[in-house]
Image 1 (tube, rainbow, N blue to C red):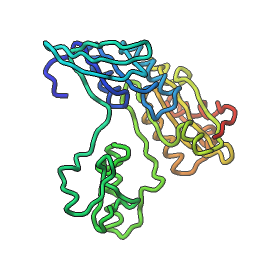
Image 2 (image 1 turned 60 degrees about the vertical axis):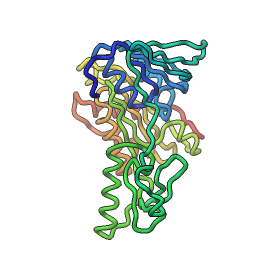
Image 3 (image 1 turned 120 degrees about the vertical axis):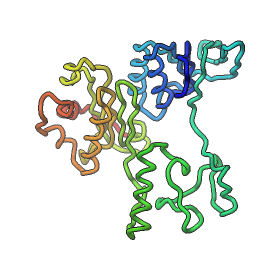
Image 4 (image 1 turned 180 degrees about the horizontal axis):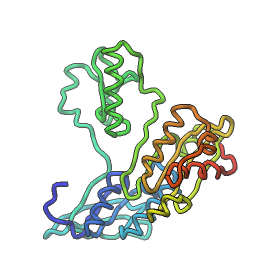
Length: 298
């Protein structure tokens, strides 16, 4: 973010949200960009169909995406970075002007001298905290990224609200079952809340899938932003919405509407049958939840 020159060829290690956001940004600045992902899909926590749709958008933008590619060695010589990668079709050497390592972060708890206070950490160095964010030492609490879990600003802020409510107001708030939405701020955005299809199967849930392309959304057509898709999971028995991924124009805002419905315990039919104004993105929820497919299960 503090570069004074535009990378001629930016190589990015890691296909998570940081790698994708920076990759697309520099691609649009004019850099050649290559994303190297160790696993078989970008955004490893997402469903394969959503991840592939994201990858297709990035490829359309001109970004080279290498999947199942493991970095073995990196060298810098005469201003050129050489990254040796083991890919499905053999070993290859990528040469670029800059390298961005976006493979995850480590907590800097080693500078806190936690042992002096008897505060426990896990094998990765994250502070261990319970559902009330209290550590193994009574009266000592951990908030935000330092305790592991999703590293999002809104999670850290909610941690603060939990402690504020409990310690100052005598509340009983916990992190149990709180929804943790997130948005990948690529263009278009990917908004996610609740269970993925894979997570629902692993949990043994019976569910139905609602899915449609953004090209079916009238507002997206009008603003010429039709890339992406909308996908939601619905409990097969109760009709409750289990989760959603919205990859498209203002995907994060559409996702938030579904999140509010989930928080309020509304069945999917409430969004399917609601009268939304035309032409808005919200009316796409009528069509999305009218497209339920056959039941799936764990």
